[in-house]
Length: 174
Image 1 (tube, rainbow, N blue to C red):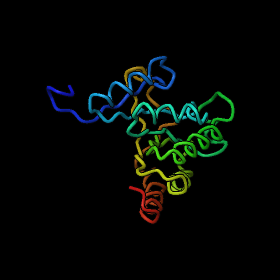
Image 2: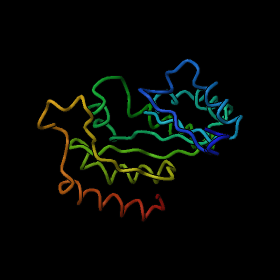
Image 3: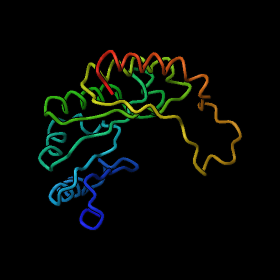
Image 4: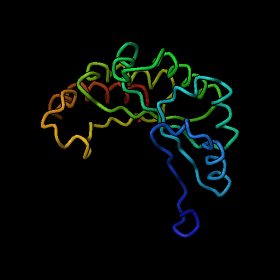
């Protein structure tokens, strides 16, 4: 793909790609052949400064960090784990200190609507270049359920999203 199609970028996603035992080698190989690798992650494994630094040494282009809430809402959305929000914040601080660019992905659900503006503010404070606001996309495994209790209609999202976009604009975040 790099040479035949002249691709310049590649995204690695999962599950959680930072758990793959060879991810640093994979990122390094991609960078060595002229691709600009992005890792799409929840970011918690980057809370260790040496782990974040290893990605920089491997040639990471940037990270796309899934930030679906701030504070206690993060734990409620993730449903498990310890200190998830604090680990994400430490990871963002590590990336910023290392000069490794990052962007945010935010899946908008009923649980985080009231936090969209706070997430936009967080993007500005931490130095995210872009915030992607995404709606929940039910895949085939959701086909049996007619209603998904955390899914929210676009019309419900709109007022919260408009305030978040305004905050991003104010802070210079795309």
